[in-house]
Length: 371
Ligand SMILES: O=C(O)CCC(=O)C(=O)O
Image (cartoon, rainbow, N blue to C red; front, side, top):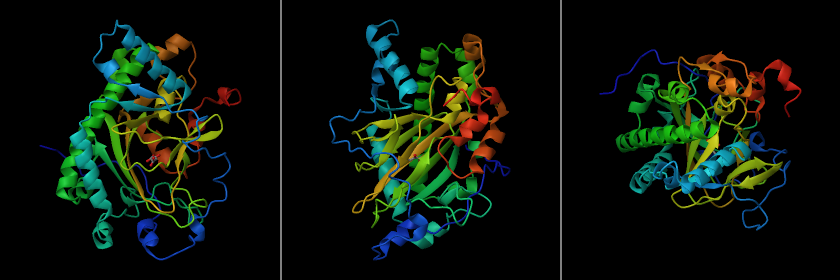
């Protein structure tokens, strides 16, 4: 039986903005100025049809989870995972163990959720003092440019941090599938973190202590068709604040792009694959060995796109900083230590701006040396 706590932590707020999905239903040929970006062509665009573009690495998790650790298959895949986390900060996973039927069921419910009439969604809209619910995150001023996206955001784990009132208002079948999905994705995140710990030579107990009761939140994204897609962005460039993000691309429309060597590289949706990326917490915990990478989402003129991002962070009550077992290995700590709650509150109080928040965590004397 789920317990809940009326004193759940409020991680932040965001200014209330109108629904983009409703706006996109109107017969408009131009987007309102608040959605117009003039900076989104700053990095050359690459199409995944171009044979010269690199592919985001694909890791076969079966080779890691079900193969003896002495085997060459295991070490080959572990090395691939380690290299992907260091050099890309992004990879896709196949044979990940999350059942196809759960993925299908959850997808169906999320699609239905975004099709609910506005009167129903209004009951789940963000409140002024808390950013959980429908809306947008990181909106801190009336002048700020907005993303061409509606999202629903909720903290799912641990249960005592969940906004019980909000969760209870979700359609019952979505609630049930979301609960199952959240548990499966936590298992997957822990398993991937475990493999990363081995690749890094990190103390296993330290990894478990940091992440066993980790904070998980889920963000469902709906990107409506946009009449001027080249002027808008579905999601501003950002790195994630968490340790590990697991993204489920619900539709096969391309939209997610990763910044690699100064270029935006598309992440082509693969059947039954999930996208995993390193977040800022993991960059900090690994003392900078793994990198959180900037990514963004673009939009299309004629087709909608949906995705669900699950963010997994260390446990509340732990201190965020480089793993002690890695600092001992590296003989230097590259980031400061702060309580996790303070870190999150700081992150959500700012406008999304690339990796700027991670810079705040870097120890002063290292800032000039790190590009
Ligand atoms: O929709 C996407 O592919 C990107 C979503 C994302 O970056 C996020 O929710 O943090």
